[in-house]
Amino acid sequence: MKIRPLLDRVVLKPTEIEETTKSGFILTSASQEKPQFSEVVAVGPGGIVDGKETEMYVKVGDKVIAGKYSGTEVKIDDTEYTIVRQSDILAIVE
Image (cartoon, rainbow, N blue to C red; front, side):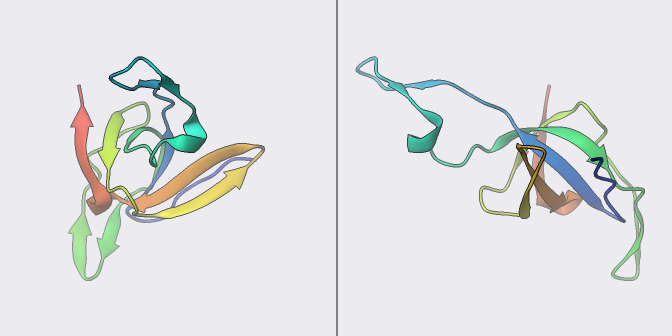
């Protein structure tokens, strides 16, 4: 199944980051907070949003930081994605 976002929406796939505590313990993904780092997997076309022309600044493959609790989480084919507005993306990681 393929996701094609509309208007200024962006589909993000959270990146798995292994986290180690100061004492050397490796935390499992279940005990970590929701990841803020994601990879862009699909981008909407932009267009008129709330009466203003919206230009898309992110592209597929970009690594981004998004708001911690923003967007809508969906699970497709055992893969979790988050759909956010472009304005919920805080930065592009280079």
